Image: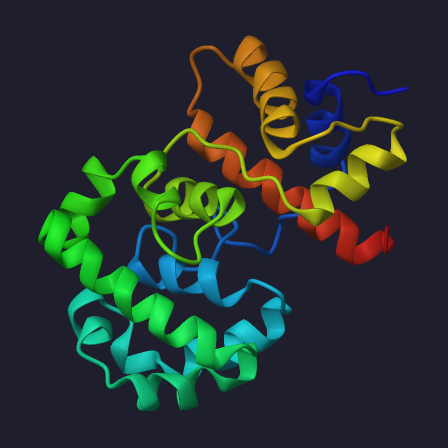
Length: 200
């Protein structure tokens, strides 16, 4: 059976799960929309997030988003649930990005995982999603789909970082000269799509 993350990656890649997806799997990678989506997707489905993002269509750049009225934002992200909690956290995050980095491009280049984890409402999964898909960093995202897939191969760990290190280590060893961001981005995408199809 599969004992390392490279074997699992190759197993998933052989299934051609991302043939209809964007290059990095997450829609509109490299934009502030990813930051918003990473928070909105907490405790809900991506289908609901898509409805919220559609409602926010004209406000998905950093400055427009940060200028939104809190009540307006709550109404627009209502489909994602927990809108009374998510709206103020997202607004504060947008303003903190402006205050700390000035603009979104500087945020992409300079933000650290540690800074993100200090922001209210940003846990390890959301931080890695933002770093991987918004900032093009070499970070693997771990979510409930990841844990379910690995469990099906009798692989389990105690905490988030152990899962992350397991997944990244096999890839780093095999792809020393490759674009690790692209590989991690697609790896996580394949895990999600596999779970959707096979209902793990």
